Amino acid sequence: MRVLSAVKPVGLDIVMNKPNRSKYYDSNHNSSLLNLPVMRAAYSDRTAWLMARCSELAYVEFEAGQEQQLRDSLKELGLEFVRGFSRDATCACLARNDRFAVLAFRGTTQDYRNILTDMDIRFYRDKSGARISDGFSKAYALVQDDIAAAVGALAVSLPLYITGHSLGGALAVIASTRIQPSDRIAACYTYGCPRVGTGEFASQLWKVPVYRQVHSSDIVPRVPFGFGYRQAGDLRYIERSGALIEDPNSIGLFFSFVLSLVTNFKRVFENHRIAGYVASLQDWALYRLKLDKDMQAAYAAAHGSAPAKTLSSSGSVAH
Image 1 (tube, rainbow, N blue to C red):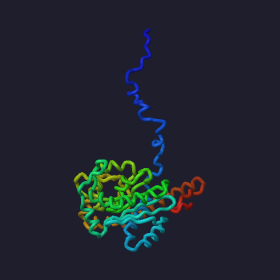
Image 2 (tube, one colour):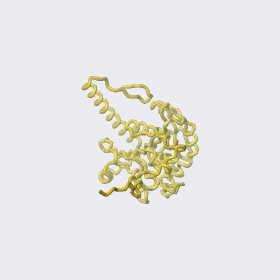
Image 3 (spheres, rainbow, N blue to C red):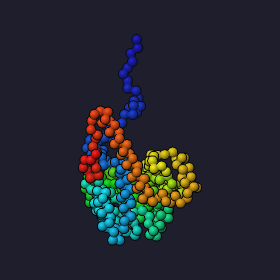
Image 4 (cartoon, rainbow, N blue to C red):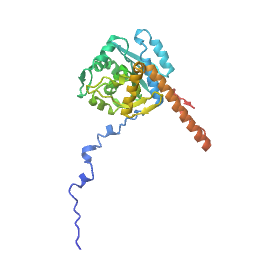
């Protein structure tokens, strides 16, 4: 009988994908791996509606004597106005409560400087080498330092949501790559956001959840055309019926938009309005809440237990 020697095959560690522990793990420097981004937030119908309202309120001209109106409106949403940012038509506001903070950017207005920003589609190459719209990049740079200081003054434990509509959405996306540390950013919600940069820029957003809401017949998310511009983030598509679809079939999406373009050209601009996004998302969130409530009631009836309680926006317990 032939006896086989216990010889370890050459390259067994490689075949078994056994990692080199000393290369990837250092017990003295593993704190960064254990510091998990626990502030990250999954998509929520109610949050999508709330961020749409904040994006809508970003249009309130606090810099022109309407700050109290903005404060009152934010208070109705359970938020406290922290401060506004305004420089050369780039505007944003920061608000907070005990559970989270919101940074909302204003979109395109009739100010010619906003229009020039939208039209400047030349590429700017940032420090990472990614190419983004020169107009959007310059617009964000105007308020970048002030925003960094204001966000830095917030409690580190306070998650930050970033949001915006139209041009404001583009600035929100850029902010999601610039605000540090990125682990404090819960998510970025955009509405009718145009394309901001190339695929290289889109790859920078893999750490921060970006949820972009697009109405079926909104033309702005489809521009600029060509030149290597790409959309970034997880798509939530609002159908004509008001239903929300995650990552719809791209071919069906294209033909649906073409149909809207041909049958009612005016609609592709009307459905870009932030008020339309707010209304659609409110209806959808209420519909989903009703479904959830009905399911809880049916479960309780079947098992003889009380329906579960949920947290209200103020943090108190509510049904």
